[in-house]
Image (cartoon, rainbow, N blue to C red; front, side, top):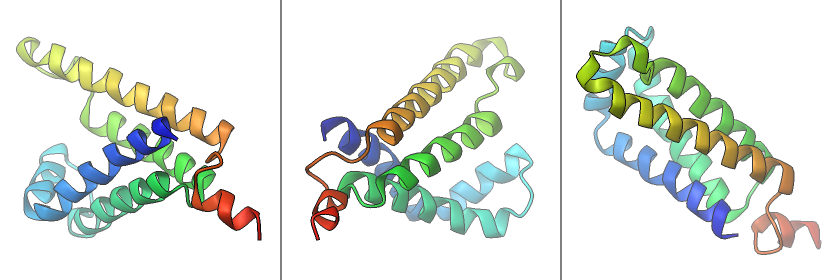
Length: 127
C-alpha cells in the first residue's frame, strides 16, 4: 500500500505541476525537439496525473503500473540523456536518469504484486 501510494503520488504531483504550467511544459518539450508539442503538452500532463490517481487509489493497478513504466521510460529517454549535457550538468541529469530507473523498478514491482487488499481493485474483486 505505502509503496503504491508513494509511487502514485509522485506521478500525481508531477502531472499536476505540469497541468498548472502547461505553457512552461510546452516550452520544455519544444527545447527537447519533441514533435506535436501542442498536442503532447496537453495530453502528457493529464496522462501522468491520471496514472498517479489510479496508482494511489489502486484502480486498474496493473494497467496503471504498465503505463507508469512506459511513461517514465519515454521521459527518461527524452529528457535525461545525461551524456549529452555539459559537464557541469551531467551529475544532476545522471541522478534524474537513475531516479527514472528507480521509478520504473517500482512500477514493475507494482505490476507483479498488484494493488493489494487496500485498493479499489480489491473492493471490486469481492463483488
